Image 1: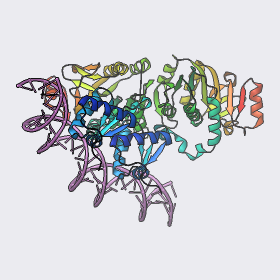
Image 2 (image 1 turned 90 degrees about the vertical axis):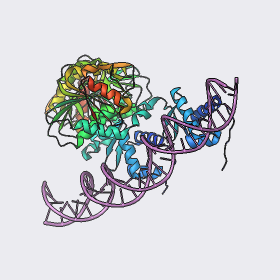
Image 3 (image 1 turned 45 degrees about the vertical axis):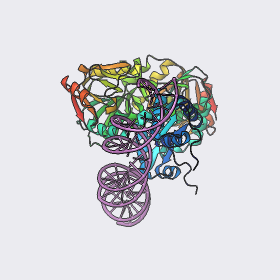
Image 4 (image 1 turned 180 degrees about the horizontal axis):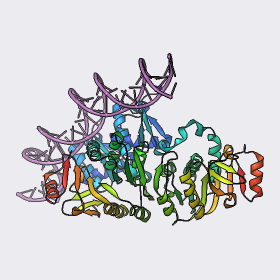
Length: 262
Length: 262
DNA sequence: TGACACAAATGAAGATATTCGAAATATTAA
DNA sequence: TTAATATTTCGAATATCTTCATTTGTGTCA
């Protein structure tokens, strides 16, 4: 077993090498780097997370990958995480649905899980309004769902339609409940997203919905983001997972929001 | 039998490969992926399920499909009948496209072939307006296409969105060319369809398009149908296949329509 | 067409091996 | 010495596998 190809490097030096390696090979593993540089795996992990925040690479389990260039923005590694939680959240969210209701499903991986849960529900007839093409695809073969797509211009990062056309189409509709996906929730501020054009659309959704249910895994719970979708007073319920930290949950409850942990 | 083409990948890496495979091939099977990556089928199912909520693909029994394949009714035997002709028609129709243009793509299997042809074109930027979800899905990963969906209520038979919402959204748009699918063409009457709600929408499309190009394989050429979409005078071009009977073709040409046989 | 049976595919549960992150400890450079 | 850096340790999280009961799809037969 050959060990330690390069040793005795300064931390900074090592990080540059790692960065170069990722760029060349597209992938690196924690184990391989540790033995190559003769350090512990903990050290490598530290390097990788530094390089990740510097935007050089994406962390994954067991290693790191090159940033997916161009086309594949839809395959953001972050989106793929916390899958089990999202499934549970989706089921809990779908359990609220009663026959005859009209729902809005926002775009996002968690709301897609709601759509998947709806497929398994035994419903006679509901109306679903969604601007997400993948959500539409999931509900395509569910006869009980009357599917309404407000339309708009495609945003490829989220597979969804937005823009003024979407907003004006929405303004003529009404819904019993909105399921809103969030990229950040702060109990003091509200629900946030990194995508500005969709923030507008979400605001319109909130206006036409009687009840607003936010779905988000716990990792979103204390994270802030650029554009505000909704203030805390506009929300009615949050469905998140059991690993949610207690403080924000308590604060949200104090402000009158029903928080469900699943 | 070649086994295990790629092994020892990180989980996220494997998911990216699967995503790429689905995009290229349109379909993948659980078994094939499992042996290719040297994992159990359970793992692959997990991957597919994650990728489904990310909107990359749609799960089916035994594997997964690209969004557009799922939406395509072309699995119907009757649609496959004139497949080769439709492909040729689609290519000829796409060949008309110039960079910077704005097009409308109607729903239907022939127009879906136009979308497939567009994927292979080397364009810098075009605008595509479509109400067909399968057409939209086909153009999802084509960065050169600015995709606009007018919205509406889903009609499952054609995978398309129609209704008043669609018509009013369309009324604010303009297009250089409309590609209209037809279920029946009569040189005396015009273009017909069996679907009433879509006839309304098609009329609106014609209103906002500078040029109207009808695409239809020869079997539609003397067939009549219930509702009239467009009178002959409203059309500019017909693209059909070489097996078209000469009489209707001649009659259409006499009436000033350019007919292309491919 | 509909009912029935068979095979394939699925998802849930339990077990196992990796990997991770945090904290306390050790080492190194200036 | 001091601050930065790296190490070990260990409980928690993740990824994967096997098994098994259930569901789903595909014939076949009437």
